[in-house]
Length: 280
Image 1 (cartoon, rainbow, N blue to C red):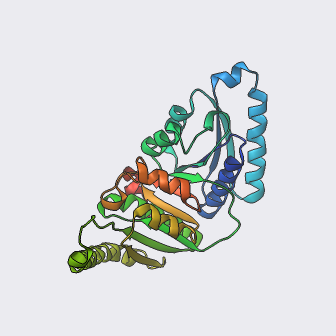
Image 2 (tube, rainbow, N blue to C red):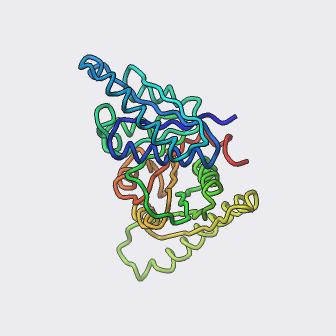
Image 3 (cartoon, rainbow, N blue to C red):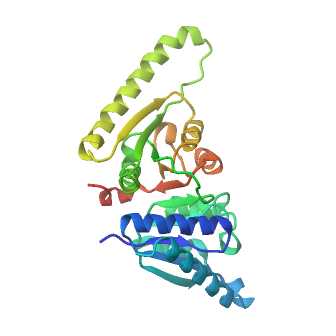
């Protein structure tokens, strides 16, 4: 049986958007929703426990209003944000949080806290910037081959649940060459070979999931630029937490910073070890 979706609550606008996204996802996939707030020691010392409890209750009311059929539970944890959330997520389906927060979640995307969760949480981590007002009917997944299998499985699950098209995007950045004219034919052939290899790898996913419309797109572009542009017409961008080629260090390095800074929709970061639990 699938674990619950855990949404991080801290009262900030992105946190509210994360709760709304998590509630919708829980409703679509018939999963329990757990709303969690980590009340660190400084907050307890300042007498903010009652405020934190009220924040959780308000988030639960919001979630139940958006998805009345799902089970919603709340929990306030003492301790430190990263360690507590990593431990809590061990048996979860996914972890959903806002891109920026207040209190313990400050700097969640831009600082070390976000990198720690994206790099070490054992489940998909979905980062939500703001509430969505437009539905595009498309999920985008960054694909680089073997290291993208878990990301592909999560993306297929989301596309099926959202009745959306799945765009499999492979971005290939050519090396810097001194003579473009002389190297043009070589680059063209190399790109064709890479594109054909991706097509062959994506084909089994189409065959195993005939109920999901899966299309592939190979682009000669920087991965940040490719994913950013694709995100403007997507409801979710999915990347693996580790990769090869254009998506190497897609979350833990400079590419991830670019995607998380500039993606126009929620971003899901999927660790490789969840592969066996998705869409098979």
